[in-house]
Length: 224
Image (cartoon, rainbow, N blue to C red):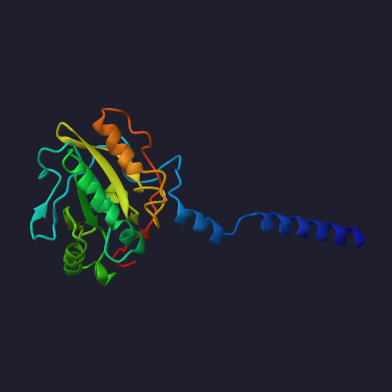
């Protein structure tokens, strides 16, 4: 009896030590918020080298917009983003800066709001117009109103970036993920994934990092 009790207490002690030695879920979530950690594999959506699907979506200016409608460009910085998400808001100035930095070099920004406005009213088409005017967006801001585009690309967060290179008549994926590695502070970011990708493409070099984990809010889907 004493021997059985001793064995039981030993097992309980080992289990307690194992659980205590692991970092909490909250600590892991905090790490995820602070940095866009590079993951070795991408589970769904487009990968580097895939030909991206074109689309036709409404822009806030009332016109239909597609990749085919771009002229004299070498590629595009395609960003799934929205109005309400604090991560998206934190990156707005950096997205505007990317467009100003690369539009004239052939890589304009195109933003797509993938959220269902019935689920998140702050992401309605009218609110998109207001936000774009308020912030002075210099790029198209489209609504994936049927939510048919973002699943094909594999976007899961706002913001989520896809750098596409124009190769003859196709747009080929060259980078997928975060804009940089510090959503809360542009000044403290020391890895600029999108800039590095576009700079490499403009120089005719290989993109140094083709995939990082996007950090942001989940996409708001009708019925979920």
